[in-house]
Length: 439
Ligand SMILES: NC(=O)c1ccc[n+]([C@@H]2O[C@H](COP(=O)([O-])OP(=O)(O)OC[C@H]3O[C@@H](n4cnc5c(N)ncnc54)[C@H](O)[C@@H]3O)[C@@H](O)[C@H]2O)c1
Image (tube, rainbow, N blue to C red; front, side, top):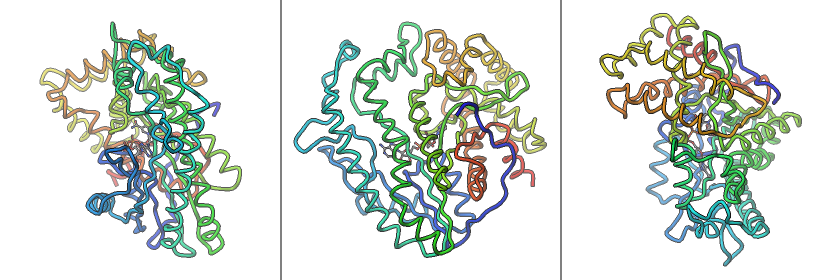
């Protein structure tokens, strides 16, 4: 993508109804983005089907859910779950009896990791094993799914998978420094990317965050052909991230969280949608705003771009309902702090020289820097201090609103999607929320 392609108009057509099937390709967590889409699918009366990534036993072997885990997950989803483990990535895969990539990383220490090297020929073999495993498992899922989707109905496949950080102690310590460290504790994201450890992590991100979308599209080809032959339609969506336009100096401007280590995998995800689109398959990656979820909590400062949504709600004619959102957020702050003070701090942050330099779409995803960490993590800390309680944050409320707004935007746009990659910026999210709540 040379420039971000924004969704500017509220979509309003819907081809999905009762009897059609919504398939969630990833697990559902409480604050996760997928809730927005699922809510819409349920409102339209669609049948909901989910998958599981499975669980690891005490020897790290991947297993299906136990009956108790399965019924809990199905109750949480509000639909049936196909119980074949779809854990992606190859961090714990290896040819039989050989070491996994995670085993290879086990010897790395905080002192040694930048010089430690990996046996790439062996890593490639592990990756091949992982790819074969997930493709076989997807084939099994599709066999079961085929029987659950009636001829002539429409199917909506929603990909939500992202991740791939290997579970090794040394990386926890490194991640804490790269994403949360400043001053003496700052660590450069470039150091990670230049190391063998970093290169392995990026490969695993590609597998989990991007390639699974490709495997989903390929694995469901027979279902797609059958449904299309019998009068149905098939759609694919995935959640991307590639920065977001937010209000800065009174105008919607593109900005990003840096360093977004998964950025290259997210661009690969976009390319997968573009290639599918070229083959007449309707696959759309929706690049979504920064919100706080289980997956994003590690990135200190990612939430700072969320605050100007409060201004966008007013700017997009949110009226009484927008005003109400301000009133919900104000009491979360200390008595002597106003939302205006907080928003001014965010405005100063966004218009600072450091942040202005980071608004470089062509150079995305840019490395972090000591100056960025100082400013971003420092501002994040200061803003948390402005709250009465660090577990009840303004961004908690705003994250829930964004998630709610993306639901109908993605759901309706996907009926007749304008293209393979679309940005959902604060303007359209605010318009959607205002429409829903002021109707
Ligand atoms: N939170 C944000 O700020 C933000 C912004 C833009 C896009 N997104 C994207 O939205 C999607 C959902 O993320 P979320 O933030 O709602 O968090 P989430 O934690 O709710 O979702 C993460 C998803 O990834 C799946 N997953 C994790 N590791 C996996 C693995 N090894 N194999 C297979 N699946 C795996 C989980 O099952 C879950 O469905 C992701 O693609 C994420 O990158 C998030």
